[in-house]
Amino acid sequence: MCEQQYFFDYVLGYKQPSNKKADKGTIVHKALEILAFIKYTEQQDKKTFIDDIIGEVNINNYNLDNIIKQVYDFYSSNFTHHEWKPIDFKDCYKWTYKAINYANGMFDPRNRNILYPEQRFDITIDKPWAKYDYGDLKGELAIKGTIDLITRPSEDTLEIIDWKTGRRLDWATGQEKTQEKLEKDPQLMIYFYAAKKLYPEIKNCIVTIFFINDGGPFSVSFHNNDLLATEDLLREKFNRIKQCKLPRLSKSWKCTKLCMYGKKTFEDTHIPVITEYRDNQICNVGESMTMCEQVKHDIQLKGMKEVVDEYTVPGYNVGHYKAPGSTE
Image (cartoon, rainbow, N blue to C red; front, side, top):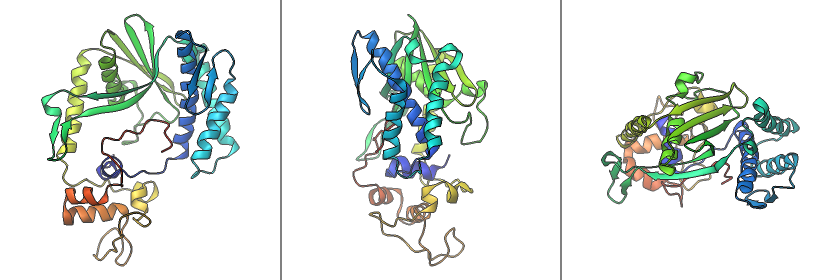
């Protein structure tokens, strides 16, 4: 969407505050994850499991309403930059039940044969084009992520289920995600690619993205020839990132309304704030530069490497992966 925002997030390691709608989605995801682990634990012939938020869960003695409340209380107490209201809990409660009651429980994890819930992956792309060498930083491209749920409807078929509580939109373009567009959706293609690497014995793969509040489930069937198409997609994106010498700014109304880097300065960070001294810039002469403008200024003045060395958040590693639901 914006190369400069990507640079801040994934190269320098800055963190924008989450929005409430996304955090409500996280709450629903977590409740559904616990239901999936209840079924998975049953399949393993065990009676209990330990969840990282609500603690021990007895699969024969639990209350879903209580689970939703415990998850909501945890996240609302950690995400204190929001003003949480009773309607927010009602939404999380309603959306969770909406998901599990759809089509007589078709997507209730407890009615599925669970292969694994919250499947994490970290897969190195072993191809010549995936190598990189920046002197003291070299290696191969790896893709990292977490799949909400992997089920096994039959012996030779797996189905990936990804829950969405937001609108069925491509946020980069504002256009609706149709069935045709979902068949070429990068996230779904990468999930398929990861699943085939994790479970190579599986012949068939279905990826279902469930828009709980905007259209329900949409399923895409992927095949082995889609592996090459996914690698082509990754190669194109990877080469674009490698060739970037000056991150492009996607200037729009979003910069000053939605993006932290276009709204705030480096005040209260380890970086000294620069006062704008040039005419005809985004910031007026005599004003403190925004984070976005200051980094752009210093890349032009000092170069990419020096900016990365100077501006990276202390302790941040470029290979860091933040799992969904994390409060860090």
